[in-house]
Length: 129
Picture 1 (tube, rainbow, N blue to C red):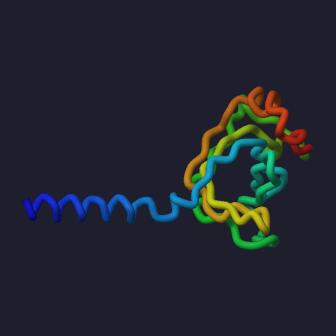
Picture 2: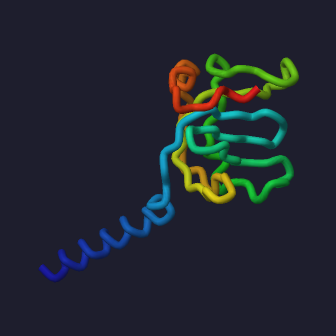
């Protein structure tokens, strides 16, 4: 019995340790934009959140920025220079934020959504130009 209890405690400790930063995670959905090189934003009902900024001009890039979803060409509106690949889509991401600075500190995961979902969401501002 003592052995089972020790095993249960060890497994519990591993579960708590694996949650780590995830306890601060929140799911945010909105316009996902790449307006210019090195810049990624998520614009939801609360703020325009910076994920990465060119040359980290506005602070450090989010940890796990590589976990942000890749844009889906069929769910992407190109803006700026035609053919350059800059524009916006719609996405949900699981992130840790710094609300005071409107920055995403860490990206845990993300999914591209149909543009229609963001277009229909009345809580969102208009998409970025």
